[in-house]
Image (tube, rainbow, N blue to C red; front, side):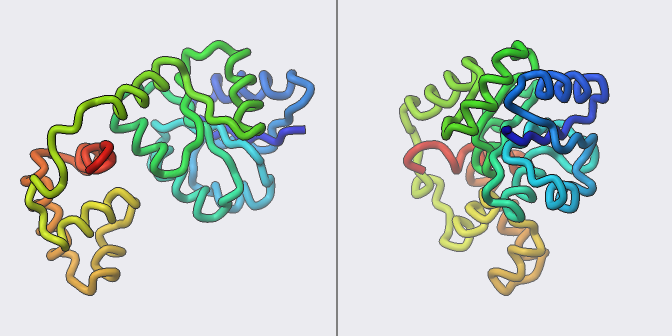
Length: 209
């Protein structure tokens, strides 16, 4: 039996997904959570192999949840299950450790197939998401980090953002104050012509940067 956990704040949808999994015959739902508040203790108890996780969760986002799960349970495989189709969310989720990305409009039988595919070593994605991923790697690269004239420290800060480090962790890693980290990040945003962490991460993850 494939053991599956669901993290979804919509009670009706969470219940429907649980029933869908239980009715397959080769899967069982071992955890059903509305948020990520107790995810480590719950997953330590349930030990799911596959996690179906929403992105738009209350308090702690699903992308941060992926980081938490993968840091505590590296063997668990995660499929994002979301309404978000924008590039930033897709690449942030994959960078965080997600191995699948399904839209909530995915038909039930395809959700089940995706869980089996991930369990068998695949990386299931909704067709429109897979197209976005492929197109991102086919785009001609007009700029490199060198052309943005980032300093060595600014590059380090940028890739620390990519790795999901908090301001406090960056300050500890580079032996500087949090205010200095904020200054570096402001400089990175200015040089990259972006206005948010997700935009900076997306630009950093483009091929050949």
